[in-house]
Each structure stands twice: as structure tokens, then as C-alpha cells.
Image 1 (cartoon, helix red, strand yellow):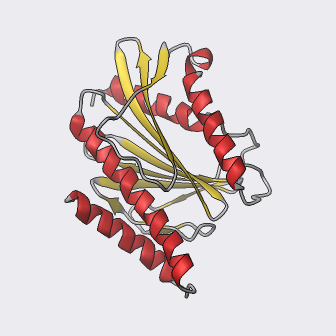
Image 2: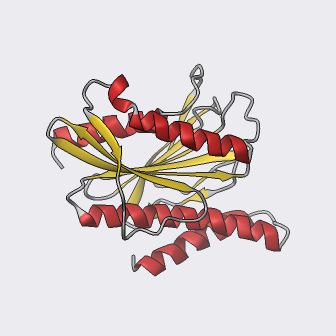
Length: 228
């Protein structure tokens, strides 16, 4: 990946993830070691150092719940996969289902309007992924972003989990089918983790440590299905 291409992917994707997110004053930010297993205290989800071909490179936690936590993963090609865990207000009030649906629509609209706010981006449009079966855990949308002669495809996945918004963003070259397949596997693994935790809550009372174990098991099973 050339330096320009990587810079464009990172800058555009970062802007993409901010679309639809309320503005709030920043507070203290804490960085966690990349190679340790990270357990989010609000959702009790466990994020391992490795998910499929993606390695965790950074955990950025902002004490302001609107900005929330960002868990960043990268693969060897330099493809970034970010997981955002956040709320819609500074009081960290649990997000309702109707608020989640509205937030997804606003986020989608914000992404499509990116050229109005960033002069370096000429166009953003929805694209189809005919061979893709999106997880039922949340909503997924696919975009193609044009900046000069450079194109980027991006996947947005948004889910509601224990009153928090879980947003995934993975961007890659539209000409690289392997990168696209890797992006799908990453999203599927995280979605499986969410689904496993939800199912565990329905079937049995949770004991301390059970949710983290079920999250890890879900990721392992998803990786086995994709042949990782």
C-alpha cells in the first residue's frame, strides 16, 4: 500500500466514522496496550489481539461516552478495521431501538454527503455486494468513495448491544478481492461475538467471566468457519 493510498484510506475512513455522531467536548483519552486482550467494561465484550487476519494495534478509550472506545485492527496489507463502542449522549443513557434505527439512517445520509464537507472527496455512492450475506445482528451498508484517481470501498456495520452502539468500519481497495473477503470475515467474527453474547443472556444466568468466555468462543467459531 503506497503512502498516499494509506493516508487517503485512513483520513476518509476516519471521517466516515464520525458521520452521524453527535458533537461533544473531548475528555481524557486512555490508550491500552495493543497485544493484550481488551474487555470493554460497559458491554463486557472481549476483544482479542487477533481476529482472523487482523491484529489489534490500538485501543483508544475516551471518558466521554459519545466518543467512547475505538478498537483498531490492521492486517498485513495495512487494511484498517475499526470497532467503535459509544453512546448518543454524555450521560451514557442506554440507546433505544428506535434511536438506533434513526442513528443508522443519519449515519448513512452523512456518509453520502461527505463531498459537501470534504473538498478532496468527489463522490460517495452505495454499491452492491452480490456475494455478501450480511449478519442479521445489525445493519450493513457498502460505499465507494472517489478522491481524484483513487477509489476506496468501505463497509459500515452498526449494531445495538446492551444499550451501546457498536459500529464497525473496514475500508479496502475495490480491486482487491482478498481484502474484501478479509473485511467480510472480520465483520462476521465480531457480529458472531455479539450474537453469542445475546444468546447466552437468553438461555442462562451469567456468572462472572462467562460473557468474556462466550465472546472468545464466538470469535473462534467464526474463524473456523472461514478457514482462518
